[in-house]
Length: 167
Ligand code: FES
Ligand code: FES
Image (cartoon, rainbow, N blue to C red; front, side, top):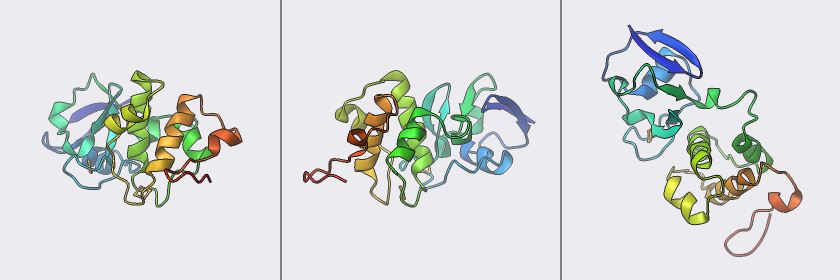
């Protein structure tokens, strides 16, 4: 029997030690908000927090996660989607299809914990998640909104596209 602390609860389940954490979360613990994209640590769809750090769970074998560590998934990030990053995401309507977005939000929330006011260069370096819908401009705007406190004033909601038009 394996043990993990996930979203504040100690959980016990059967899984082989080389099982990727992603599959433990999805299949054993039924936490399906964390998504499978590439399976080779490239896309970030599977991002969760381990001890507060963003980790790509598809490439993290169960044996590498200690029972004393804390795992947080999108389901455990906040009550009712009220984390500042989630509020900024809602305010700016960031998702398109949504598939990459839980991983994106987990990567961003980890970044803001260590760097509460990231520059665009900081964001580019830390958030390398792939979005096939191309939400990158909106993701960046929402990160800055969350960094300002998750505000929803109209000026904060305007997205400045590279060519200068605003929506
Ligand atoms: S599914 Fe883990 S990085 Fe793509
Ligand atoms: S919102 Fe569709 S892949 Fe990112």
